[in-house]
Amino acid sequence: MDRRRSPRVEAIFPVRIWGLDSNTNPFMENARATSISSAGALIQGFRRQVRLGELLEVQLGEEKCQFRVVWVGKARNAGELGLESVAAETGLWDINLCRCSQFAAHG
Image (cartoon, rainbow, N blue to C red):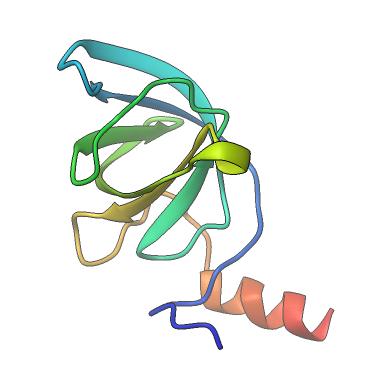
């Protein structure tokens, strides 16, 4: 049973992420946002070590939003992060996620 608070849509968005790594060194890195929702996203292709709870800035095009790290991939999921928007909802993805998920379900 899926306990997520909002529907997810499988998509691939190139994003730029910056913040502080686990050694408190500033970084900026390109990655991919996938499995997106109004409240967060799965980030893939991420090479830095970051701590749970760390705040990161994510940029898609000209839009920016702040996210909190809620999951860090280990072993087979290395290079993945689970992010949750600090704001109630993010307009970063600029699509109607409910409509997209309904379309995908009826595909």
